[in-house]
Length: 475
Image (cartoon, rainbow, N blue to C red; front, side, top):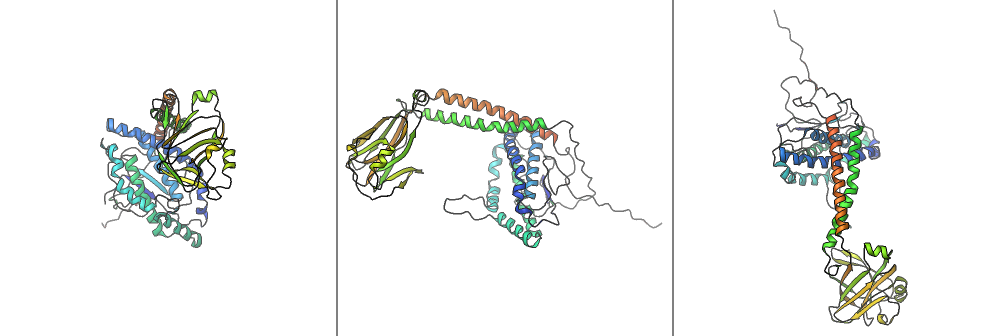
């Protein structure tokens, strides 16, 4: 059987605690935090490695060592935790290979990846991802439909129950879970490490790789001596770079959104929403608790949301009314009368919250005196409002106050030129992002050089050699 370059090994504990698996999630919290940082660095460094392979045809060795170390750390945590529950030996906090831990991962030397592989590796693994998704049960969850438990989760639960009640871990379950994890790690290595060999479509179960029997003694692997320099600088650079990615992403996204809003402005400076159909069998549709704060001179100079426009069209041609009033006045006017409050949209479909009360007509809204801004008419009616601070409600109703309201509504707000603010935020976000990537590269490469695996040409992981004593021959 052909050997895959990524070798995943596991040695199950013969005696496992009955109850420890119930609290391993708590014990692993420090590892989960560390892996969140490490995997963020892995994603960034993998992109750098992709560019290096495309340009030079070589995968940078320090980045390879770092990425292998992250996969190794992930496998140790998964084997101890909820990927296999195979050991009670707490995983070490290191990227290096720990020969004393039951879970080990090693990448054998292999030929450089082809230059085109970074462009299509993600596409080539789609069949594997489909199979692994079915095994892990990573299906989408609907609001009212619970997602069924995945195959591996069910097997893991059975293994945990067996441990809890019998104190024994069925070997078949262990070997199957390790096989699924090995398959997943091979696919991950193909994407992250650009291993030139395509992952096999097979479930290699058991703690050992399905290697052919060695033809001779296997020399014991000597670990690479650790450098004497401290890793504090590399760790600080990596963590600092990951933390800087958060403001970089926020500033860049905010700048991009502002530039997109600016591009949507019309010649008068208005940003207009799509037309939405609103309908109710009651006498009014409201948008309530519209709170506007800080509508002073400084706010208007920076956001200029003082000019709001609402266009209401009656499909039937009936006269309609649209108005804005203080929330308290609208509450008093509609007290005891059922009406629909617009609370949002789901994929373009309005979502309402109906108030209590009777479905009955109201008095003609234009006859009331509490409106701050109002408009009445047939066809298309336009409400223009210069906003001031306060809590308001927007009301759409038939001009007569009768029940059954049906209108097409389109809103617009005047905004200033956002090119400067949006462009500035985007540039600052990009600059901080570049600094973050640089720090991640420095930290990850430093850790990779320190915790790299054995030199090329070292033999793979395998069982200790069995030496045959010499046989005396007759004289």
